[in-house]
Length: 117
Image 1 (tube, rainbow, N blue to C red):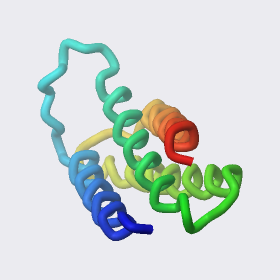
Image 2 (cartoon, rainbow, N blue to C red):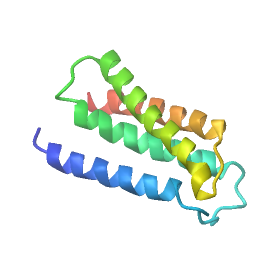
Image 3 (spheres, rainbow, N blue to C red):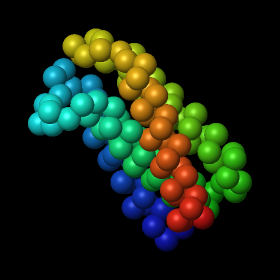
């Protein structure tokens, strides 16, 4: 509980930053030579979001299965909403992005369970 406010601030900052980056009309192509880099980016962002959300819920919510379901459900809902909004900003809705987000959420949750619970 000592760092709850700092974790909450970091999580909110991450959500805002991720939303801005994923809804930009034309994301920067600094790594355009790497195949499927956008999927790696989606997985990495959702890994970090899941990790921080699990840390936030560590003391508040007992039970790994309940925590996994809550984190997975909330972050996948967020990812789906982002994908639905993307066509309105000049980007494409991609199911593969949602799959990458699911991989990121599950791996971020697993790492938090292994090292932080």
